[in-house]
Every structure is written in structure tokens, then in C-alpha cells.
Image (cartoon, rainbow over the protein chains, first blue to last red):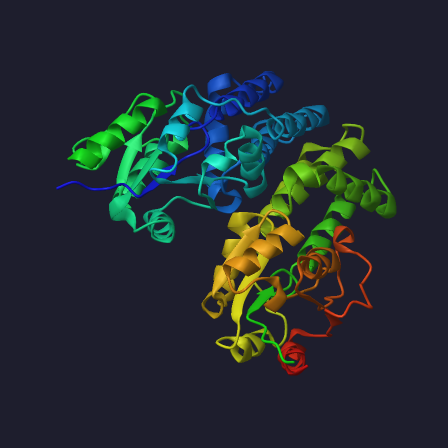
Length: 235
Length: 235
């Protein structure tokens, strides 16, 4: 029996282009700005705790990250944070929102090879406007049949997207660098989940790989996706 | 000649439920927190200038508003803003993100009267997650055929939405409280634009009404919409 993968979902941040490294760089700067008040590790821990606490209200993206940094700065200094530090955190966030798009290796060639053969859908979360900006600046917009920006990647949201752009999860595959957001919920929805690790993972996106699941695969780079798709469709 | 309005777009904030008043209340609090540093009018002016400057990067919504308040607080105090003031601005933003939904008068009955007769679409901008939360809490979700959350309301975005959910702008009507975002771009797209003023308008949403345009109307409350639709369809 052979099967066709009709719908191919691709994550954007750290799957098509670099992203997490801008968060890391900003967090480095944040650590330096508050070096007089807190140790690096303690600061990182408190910031992560704030991000976890706020994610349900702020959602994903740069603006929520900046607000969590500011909250952590006030907390950790017991309100003694200097105003210029707050100003510099705000400025760092604005730089993040303007960072240039740097595509990951092989992305363009891979998309060229896949388009036409599958319905290509970008499936991403984060700030609506920022994700639209990045896609526009990437020059990849024309490669995709649709763009879906969601507030949370869940089995339900994948099922809805795969129904809308194809024939449902059974003939769909999602590839991305987040085990928690790209791989697991796509498999739970009934599709394939392909992990393409980026190396820099945000703590909130980590999860155990479902190593024994028949619809789970890991590839080292997006360039291996056409070969994997050929294998899946031949088996 | 009679025409049918197939697609009915409705704005959400201050059209279906109160919204701007939470921004006003928070801005009042912001003014009080910084009363030692700046006069009310000057502060309001500087905050609006920051909002204007940042809107292209932050987009619409509460998180961008909070970031602009913090930036203004740092600026206006020449970095002498006390940390507890920053903490209170952050807390005020979190309260806004949790505020209960208070429907405007007549909204439920009006939607009941219109559903089934037209394709009802919520068309809103702002933070994706926050708009989803408000729609869920409003209990109105079931009334609508679709929800479109966009980063900016332009003639292009209206044309796309009206094509997708109906037969294009020529048989579509958009109603909302913003002249700049709901009325003018919907008319420019080729549809009807109906202004339902709320009384509290954000400065960035103000624009001159196209009083002589044949597809422009103003109604004082959403409850008048079924009657206006009947009139349009009869003429």
C-alpha cells in the first residue's frame, strides 16, 4: 500500500530561519544589565519562571518576552532597577522586532523541490504582525499555499488546518524544531511528526521524543525532507 | 434592482463588547503613577506619540500599549522612574488581559436576528491570543461563521476576507466603531461601511466620515443593523 502526503506543514522560527539565537543574545544582554543585582543562573531561572507564569496571558513572541524580562528585573532588584536598564530592555526588544531574516541552510532548495508536489503550509505561533513581517522579509511567501498563524499548536489546531488545506491529518506531515509544538500534537492529531532539531531550544518547547511511534521521524536538516517523503510515500 | 448582502463583517472591540474604556482606565492609573513627574496632558501626548511611533513594530493590542507606557515612563522621568511604578504598569497590563467581557446593549439579540440570513464574520485586529480569549469568554463564538484576526484592516484584507467567506466585497457589509479601520477600508474594497460610534475612540482610529459616499451609513447602535440591511436589500 502506498500513501500520498497531501499536506505538508512547516514550522517557521528555527525551522525556516534563525530565531532562538536572537532571544539568547537578548537574554545575554539582560544578564549583563542586571549583573550587579543577580547571578546569571539565578536570573535565567527567574526569567524562565516569569515566562512560564505569563505564557497563558501573553502568548508566544517577542513582546511577551520583553514584558517578562521587565517584570523579572523589577522583582529581582526589589524595585531598585534603574530606569536606564528598563529603557535598554525595551530597546533590545525593538531591535529583536527589526532583526533581519537569516534563512537556514538548504531551505530554499528544499521548498523548491517540494512545492507543487504537496500543499505547503507555514504553521507558526507568536505575534501575528511579527510573523507576517518575517515571512514577508524571508522572500519565501510565494513558495507556500497558505500561512496559518495560531495562538497555540494543539492536536485540534493541526486537525483543523489539515482538514482545511488537504484531506485531513491522515495524509499530512508536520516538520519543525519543536518537539512539544510541532511534532507531538501533529502526531496526536493523526498525522506524521518530523523533528528537525535546531540546536537551540527554548525550555518551554522541550519534550520527550515519541521514539517508537510509527509516524515519528527525526532528520538532521530540512534538506532531508524530500527523501523522507519519498520513503513514506513508497511504504 | 435589489441586492443581497451575503457577508456581514463585524468588528469586535467596542462594537460587540467594551474595550477602549479599559485602556482609558489604565491610562488614568498611569497618569496618577507619574503625577510627580509630568502633567496629565503632557503625559497623554507623549504616550500617544510613543504609540504612534511603535505601532508598526508592536501592532495593536494590550502588550504593545504596556510597552509604550513603560517607554514613556522612562523617557518622561529621564530614567528616574521608580521600579515600583514599572511593576505597577506591568500589573495593570496583566489586569487588562484578564478583564471580563461586557457585551454592548442589544448585541446578542441583533446577532440572533442576523444569523442564518448572512454569513457572519468577526473581523478584528490586536493580539491573537487576547482576541481569541475575549471571543471565547463572550459566549458569542457560536453565532459566527468565521473569525478573522488580522494584523491590519486594509482594503486588501477586507477583499480577501469577503472573497473567502461569500461572493466578494460587492455583496459585503462591514460594521464597526472605527472610521479608520472598519468603515473606510471596507468601502474602498468595494463593500458597504457602517459606522457604529462607541463614544470612546482611540486617536489612531479617528478619520473623517465619507458622508457623501453611497455605501456609507452611520447607525447609533448595532440594534439598528437589521433594519439598515433590510433597507439596503430593498433598494
